[in-house]
Picture 1 (tube, rainbow, N blue to C red):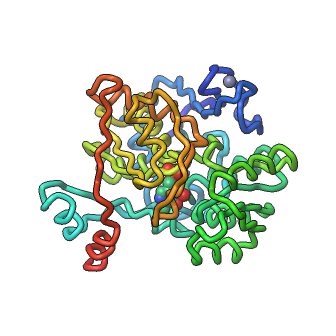
Picture 2 (picture 1 turned 90 degrees about the horizontal axis):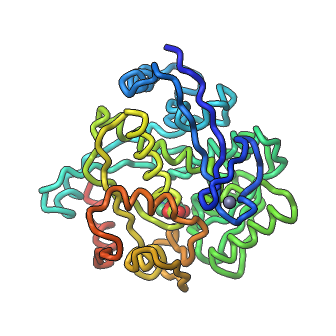
Length: 359
Ligand SMILES: Cc1ncc(COP(=O)(O)O)c(C=O)c1O
Ligand SMILES: [Zn+2]
């Protein structure tokens, strides 16, 4: 089946200015963050044709469609063609675990777990990095960098090694799981342990891009979000394109939360699905700038001194403007603005560990 090529461009989420798809700038002059948009003008590309195309690529014996990211390339980065930096990644299982379901809802909910730990470096970050490094190569980057609480740096290292590019990571000293740090070192990432928190690391990463011209691969990089969208495309496909009622996701810098909203809105616009699920973004009580802003109807952004044992979501300040998150929220939430009520859940990580250990 042939599909008309999509035209992609970058658009500033704040002022609407348009940049070419291969413009390497990390932000708009106005300070706004960039979003990737794909135009699809082919009248033959209906939802059913697109679903059939993606279904036919499942189980491809070789080539880019082995990847659970590049299988959806028309909606990710069509212009990259077959020239992609892939292990492959994705193709993660959607699991039913009775003990977890019983713990969450006494069995009243059909709960499915999308196990992103099956990705090559053990986290969902690989989906964004396969696109990020593919784009880095397309724009002629000579080195790549990120700030990381562990998983991003490991994924950066793995894909930079595959692309043959030097990588630099800033990590908060003492706040990164040792196993993750070992992955960074093993992949040859120049790893700087920063005497400061994750936010200080983000500032250093941005300075490295300004002063050294290094291509930045933090979640402000819009191409990473295009890769993260495929968690949603893949789970929709695993459910035969029948969306769930809710998708629950841990939220740090809101990369995934933003990517999920974008993926669902696009899946609806391109006719893959007709109903939009609601998204629940979960933050730790001690690192909840987004939950605080949500409570106030997004009237302002918060900066907090973050603390939580869940180091992967140890973020006190949002680098990513949650524009697309707010857009999705406004479209799917029945409550009027200002009526937001974050649901507070008791910190029961120890409980979760006990339940998972039973499986
Ligand atoms: C395991 C894990 N969960 C959640 C997050 C937070 O993701 P996001 O920054 O996309 O909200 C991260 C980010 O590092 C992570 O590694
Ligand atoms: Zn702008």
